[in-house]
Amino acid sequence: MTPMSSAAINPPVARPLPLPFHCTFVESEWRALAKHWYPVAYSPEVAGQPLARTLLDQPLILYRTTGRQVVVARDLCIHRGVPLHLGWQDGDELVCAYHGFRYGADGQCTKIPAQPDLGIPKKLCLETYVSVERYGLVWTCLAPDPAQPSTIPEWPELEDPAYRMMHDPPPEWDVTAGRQMENFIDVGHFSWIHAGTFGNRETPEVPQYEVERRSTGFHVEYPYLAANRSAAALGESPTIQRRMTYDLHLPLACRLSIDFSEGRRHLIFDAPTPVSRRKTRIFFFIARNFDHHIPERQLLDWEKAILSEDKPIVESQRPEELPVDLSEEFHIRSDRFATAYRSAMKALGLGANYSA
Ligand code: FES
Ligand SMILES: [Fe+2]
View (tube, rainbow, N blue to C red):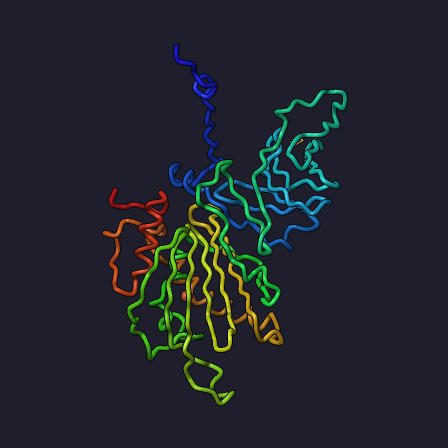
């Protein structure tokens, strides 16, 4: 008789993640997205009181323990379904506003004030999610089995003290995350919608560029002769050559490096976190290793002005979802990066396939 392994006798039962209430995603897309890591807060936002955020239609509550650990849990008391953000944090515990049930950092209920003699069952436990703090951001993943090789991107400059990281509170846009990311990597729009900031109307032609596929995404180097709006005041050239390098980490994170002479580097990061299908929280931040005397506010206002040029355009795009079948929409040479991105998103089960 052939011996059977214990794995064959008792195969693990994969319990599908329950979809959030009022899920706005197609189920297959939600399950594909839920396997990836996303930033849900900047680290300084998780201090003092618990913070409510939504990821993929799942309401979350984030808080920091006295040991400085960040806890990410489902924002719902399992007694009577009241959001925990209506309550408060007491030490390392969350207290529900409705009947005062308390939950520890592992999600386990620790106290039922109305019936203190009741043994607390193990199942009285909040759903908690894996989380990690890196680069000044809190990242989380809803699935207990994150996709491989989906990891958090490698952004070593953000761990280098030579770089100063700067950001505003993360805004929410009425867009799909895929459309926003594609806008960030679109090299053909600078001379048009950014004519009020760095765009140069005199250089609309997009030179040939290469899209290099890497293990976690794409690498693109692109030169752009940008407008230099402060030229007249400073007696400088009216244009400035930008060496731009994109490193996109699938599905929804990208670093753009703008390199100047003598190793001076200005980095722009874009990580659009899907709140719901058509609502996205934009983690857009910068870091640079030079000109530390320039006030942070001044640098952030410049980026804000550029983003405000993008926002109305991206929010107006129809269909709202990124069409990942390349027979949809019309592509030109300058869209090479975007078409590679769409194909990769399609392979991950993301975006909308209108031809299907
Ligand atoms: S609903 Fe939270 S304690 Fe009752
Ligand atoms: Fe733009």
